[in-house]
Image 1 (spheres, helix red, strand yellow):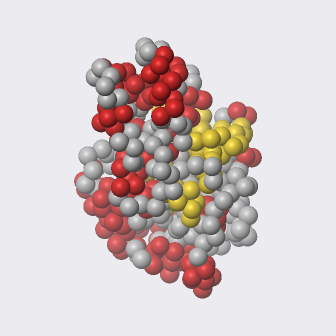
Image 2 (tube, helix red, strand yellow):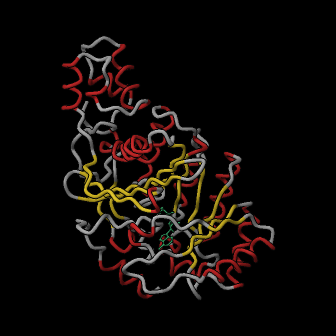
Image 3 (cartoon, protein in one colour):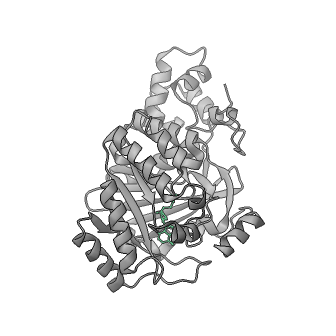
Length: 368
Ligand code: SAH
């Protein structure tokens, strides 16, 4: 044992270490060879269901607790922890393998607590209104690095039971499909979170959406649409050139047919770009065809994107126009702005060791 399954599939993970949440039950079984079989269940329960440190799994012999702590190191080292919104939002920047930084955000609401997790250090999708996209791609996270974010947030959440997980932090989950899906299975089977309380958000990676349609667990799907015609979407979301709207719609329809789940569309509201009445009408047409719920996200400021977000009045007018067209629509509450933890603001702290995006992609973006 020792090699993370995803690495064996040739993905560019930097880590050669098996971290605490990289192992499934079979992997733990191999690690605990020579110990009685029931130890595997005890370790699994302790690490996943109870979210304990090995030292705290007191039904294990002391020597085994010490051995586990050494052989299964944590993946995430806290670099910065910031608390905002009067204690209701917590953001962490973690360093993974001593270099790259990733971020996790815990959001408390009156009736639930949600954690927003990262799937990659950086992002290769290059959406220019998003701070992660501006920083470029560093590497994929392993399933263990994804799962550990949830375990750490759940510990922090304590009495306010962590109920929901959204894959909306740094990175594009469906560009790191295997690790993302392994994490989903681990959150479901290990931490006991219901598939319906897990939401994967994608920029619109069509093969990934089609693959999601074949999976057993009915997680929620959010598609970051932002524009409902190809000409505009090409400029906002560069991957649209590879997977244009007609193909995206087909894949979404296939996903809905397979799971009978509600799809949602995300729409970051940018002044005079995608907030005009004509934009609302185009969006309403797609949302009605797909029977999708629309989430409007007032644009959060990022360092590398000068264009303003839509005014509150423009957001409300847009919302009303969708509502009148029979579309289910919500304006997303702006959370975490005071600690740079809002949608699109996750840039991996200031000392990020992220490689610059390759020149051709940047050039393409400017032309678009
Ligand atoms: N790559 C995935 C998940 C990460 S982004 C995706 O694209 O869906 C999570 C959400 O925040 C997406 O809907 C994204 O478009 C949105 N977002 C990015 N930058 C933003 C900004 N500056 N203001 C508001 N929302 C933003």
